[in-house]
Image 1: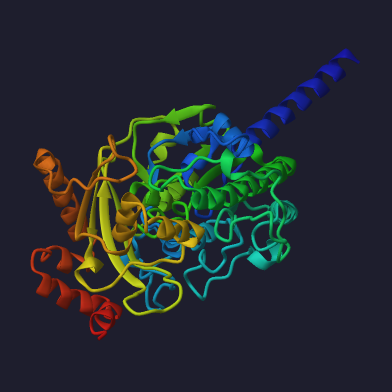
Image 2: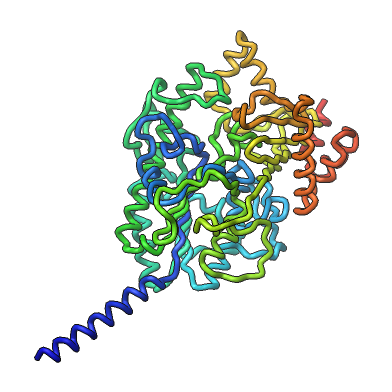
Length: 497
């Protein structure tokens, strides 16, 4: 009997060993959670002083790795998400605004590559912006309208559970792109009723409880709109918490790499749809059990969204010859040595402009380059008679316009927002809010030249058509000629009587 029992024990032990080993070798799942128009400094883990604003996202940071110098390369939702799915800058993918890839463009999407390698691919909300090819169909898809306008945590939870179960039934690893529509406009205003199945955030904030970013004036109208914004940030955190709950309950937490980012900066003046520091900074938090040490902070390296595609491929172990504009930063996830990126490159081509009006244009070509110390911005559109507008101005701009009648500083900010100099240069160490343009300060001539040369190098290497404008920036006649060729809408503005 003793021998029989020993044999049974050894068999069970071996089975347990092989079962555990098989679990360790399970393919890696990828869960990408994107916020919509979130400033990273709105989160507790990035230093927000707004009470209890993001406990669920903060928990993710405590369980994984947080990057302090992460950026998107385009501060508009559709082209930013196009970079995620194509691994190309907008001028190379054709996604230069609210548009799809050209039909004759032969370039695989990240989801197509993953599906070819056995992955179940799913998306929730922002489906159009996340699907730059009209011919591509996700294995699992939930539109914004099925998720309470992308603002209902319970509906995200219910549908995430369905996706996780379906992937298990299929016996496939998954790539799941979960897009919250918070804190995109319209922000949650408690004085207005809920629409389209939206949910209330778990708590709301008053104007006195919020923090006004330094690139905006601290006036009552701005505070009021910011309180609505923070209500939406809170609901974002509620949604993220419910998706994490669904993942935990699926039993797939341990072999899932979770990545949390925002597609661009906050939808306020001098942030989204621009090239300032507030425009392109993003939270970047990952959790990778057994691979990433809990509570790690990377305060050294610059990373940007252009590297997302190749990083995911390397994390999974896919070797492909797809031509991409970025490189993998996977070694940083593993706390290994990695070539330090010295610069991040940003671009705007076309934006949503709101209602059509004289001197407005959806084309607003800009380019930028930044490192940890400086940001240099080239405003190509400013050579024309166009006046800058975007659809993110809201109550904040209304308050600024009213205050500008009696406040010279606010008046100057409004004027700068509408009409830019051709070039801007800011010292991010001393002036992260980009309030003082030092383009003509001779004390920074050397640093400025370095940034200009770096932008030129990037534009040439990445075959940016706007380089034909940039290299002639000292000749306004040639600049306009080249701009009209690339952006006919700007010629329309210039020809207005």
